[in-house]
Image (cartoon, rainbow, N blue to C red; front, side, top):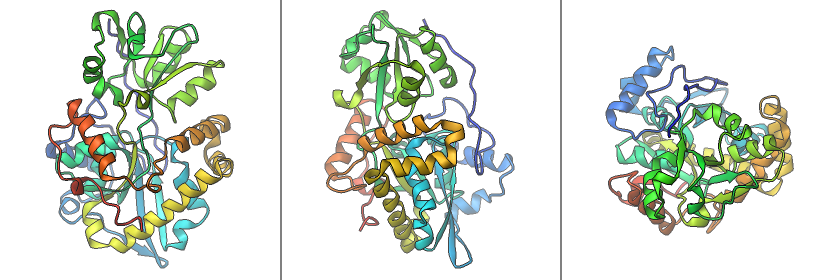
Length: 364
């Protein structure tokens, strides 16, 4: 049985994207959708010359001796984004001669689009949408890989066992059509031999999932993230929940990535290197002093998220950080595993040379 809710877009913060693209939010990219996304942004009132941006990449203005750039998140503000606010508030970007706007987004796909068209210079985006974009010739490149995994996980009430994939059978399971897990759901069922007839899949709007779970209308939340939704769910449930992380099943690709407009990387590598250096300092402080980082984020956005949620999201984000061989530096083996997982799941049709997807040259 499939239930569908109404879609609802999150509010913006600094310079919101005025209208969403077609649902589902994280559908695969192609050049037509890239152009359509840019046109939608222009129609929504954002002064952005689409065609010239597609041709020339992101332009950088200089003001007061600083380079003015923007970074687009894939979603509304959450604790996972704390390192960027730490870097800004501690003056790390200022020290590198950079003034940065940190902007909310509506989805990973749309964030890839606006960085690819050059409306934004940088993006902090989940790996799946970045990889899909590169495979469709969107001009973006990963310059730091901060998530060793996406953090996809499941949560259930204490009386609902959750120790293996087969635990889904016989239960009401949330798999939202706009979720990342939805993209790999068919391959997951096949790999682990699940009997689809025994699983009651519920496809609620993301904004309705938590309420349904708290009212015990759902047994298992199978479309949430360890450093985001899970923390909110745990706080609202008020009791210990069962947890299963897809990384424990070796079914979780690389996580969040810092990406740059490809033309900007070619045209001004020094700016990219300075931006990465400042961002790394934000991640290092967050990892080494999570309470200080959470306090900074709570001061800025505690009224929206709550201090306990921010602290929990920061702590869980730190667990997911890619630290080997070094913070933000993914290896060829890690990328090959990531691409193979997505190819096996049918999320991408082919695997391109690794250099098309990422570089570690700006981390030094």
